[in-house]
Length: 286
Image (cartoon, rainbow, N blue to C red; front, side, top):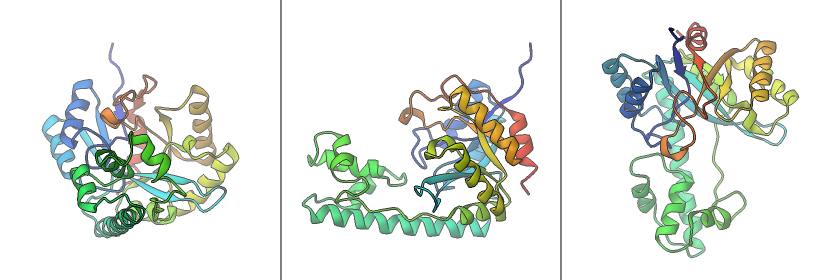
C-alpha cells in the first residue's frame, strides 16, 4: 500500500530553542520519511542556508520559514505567533527586520543584567551569552546562569522569584505588530500562517475576531493540525479555517530534547500533515 506524502511545517533548531542543528533536522526528516519540511525558528533566519543545503543533499523539499512573535493589542493582549513559509531568505526587508529584532533583544538582555545586578544577583551578558552557546539568548539562559552561580537552588526558582512578569529581574519584550510581521512575510514572497491559535487564551469568537483582523493584513492560513490539539480543537480550528476562508497548515512544533514528547512529523502521535497543505500555501508565495 502506498501512503500519501507527509510533511511538517513548524519546527525549530539550535538557531533558536531546539536541540538539533538545521542539518540534523533534515537528516531526521529523511530518516522518518517526510517529503517536505519547513524550518521556522523563532525570530531568526540564521539556520536557513544550512537547512536548504542539507535538503538538497538529502533530496527533501526544504521550505524556508520563520516564527514571528507579535502582540495583539486587544482583550488580554496575548502574544501571538505568525509563521512565514516559502519566502526569499535574502530579501532586504527581511534582513532589515532581523536587524531590528536583534537590536531590541540586545537592549532587553542588557537591561535584565542591570536589574538583576541591582538586587545583588551579579551576572554579566557575557556569561549569559556563553551559556546560550551561540543560540538566541532567552530567559532560560538567564535562569541557567543564576543556577550555576548559586543564586537559586533550581532553575524553576529563577522564573518564580526573579525573571517572570512583574518580578524584579524581568524586562518586558518589545514585540513587532501583527501587521508588520505579516507584511514582512508577504513582501518577502512568503505565505503567512497563524500558529497554534488554541494557545492564546481566546475563545472561538475572539479567535474569529483575530483572524478577521489578520486577514486584512494578508494572512493566508492557520494551523489546523498541531501537536497539543485535542480532536475537538482540531475540528474547531478546521471549521474556523473554512469559515474564514483560510488555508490549512500544520506542524509538530518540534524542538528536539527541549520538548521530548513531541516528535518530528507526528507530534504526540496525533499528526499526519498532508503535502496538500503546503501545495495550497505554496500558491500564495512568489
